[in-house]
Image 1 (cartoon, helix red, strand yellow):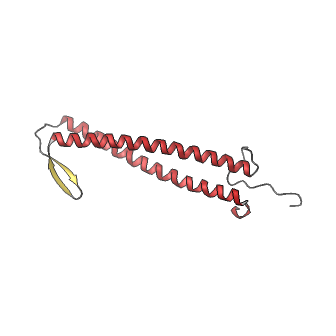
Image 2: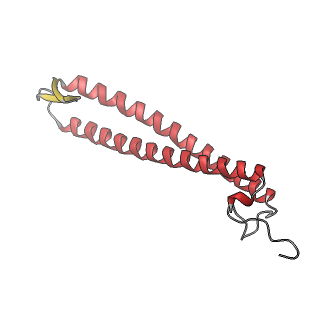
Image 3: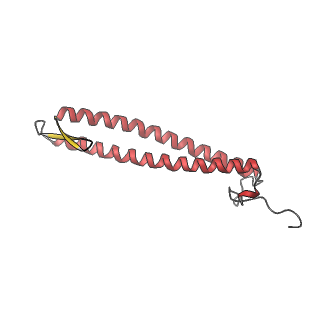
Amino acid sequence: MQGNLPPEAQEKLEELQDLQETAQQVAVQKNQAETQLNESRNALETLEEVDADTTMYREAGELLIETDHETATEELDEKVDSLEVRLETLKKQEERVQSEFEQLQQELQQMLGGGGGMGGGPGAGPSPGPGA
């Protein structure tokens, strides 16, 4: 089907496919950031219930390193702040990619003569001409 498309339409279709891959990657990153943010917030809540002189440990790769309540709280606060910024950035990126995808999809439909009808889409090719 793609071999029958004009070169410009083929190029737009490839751009659409690239944008779709980018959108999937951004969605995965966003989900990971949301999970990390929730875990960090839960850890902060747990820290609020723990005695300040309780012995605590934090992960450093494969190791557990002793830390104090104040340091653990500060590090988690910083992590939460950082993840909130990252999540906001990913949301904006997701919106931008979605907007570009929709615009490119419209351009492709117009290029193929669909004009945005219900049956038109990236897979809908031009109708056969007379004598087909």
